[in-house]
Image (cartoon, rainbow, N blue to C red; front, top):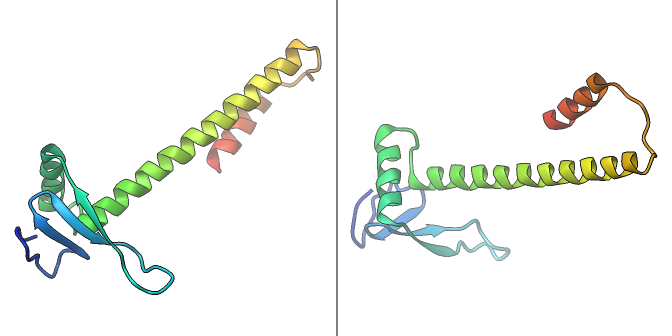
Length: 119
């Protein structure tokens, strides 16, 4: 990607104004226009991005940013699932402490947890 006011055409929808400062087009809004979102990167992040692009791991900054956001979103979703599991476990332990539990095998519990984790 070129530096300075003009970026090359293979920038994946991104325009680099100055090294580390990028303007990216967002998906079209309801009226069909793309919004320009400025993204400034810290020097160490810029070096990482440049290395990833040079290695061929990503074809463009846009592809790398999309992968990063998807990874972050996935991590958030997993954290929400873990929090729900902990809440369920705490509720179950509360029921057991109150004498409301049912007898089951550890294998059945493990199978249920594995099935839930696969979803």
